Image 1 (cartoon, one colour):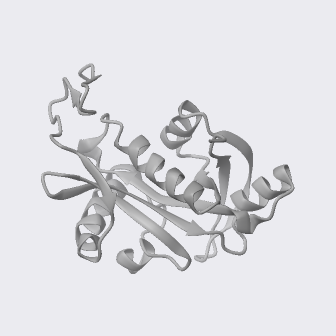
Image 2: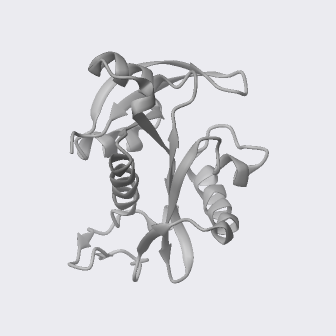
Length: 189
């Protein structure tokens, strides 16, 4: 793989598919079809999400969604992240509240974070994550997330960005499948 070097404008050079003008902005309703297409590419390449949803656009807009953002290049989505209130059974908010003595209601869950395979290596995931963290903090909430234990690239990203590992555990999904997840909390800001 070519060495990537980030230019001052935040775009990596040295990539065979260097992106021009990547912008992160709030997601709009008309972004969903493009976000679903990119999600399909990510699923094919990486198996994320592990269980392909029957209604992918609805999966990107879960109950309790506070906000969502897209990374866009040349008018097309190349990445996505969402921020939602914690739901019953969410492990990361429970571990965070146990560690801090706070309520899970004082946390917000970052999820649905993905970057198109051809757009990786440009810090897009970190930029999307930063938007979600900033928004959570503006709402007075502490950002947390969980990630499949098998998703080593995502785990490495969160560790590299200074997220605190809260613990790991099994989580039951709506599909009935039980998975092991690692839970993280954003660095104190």
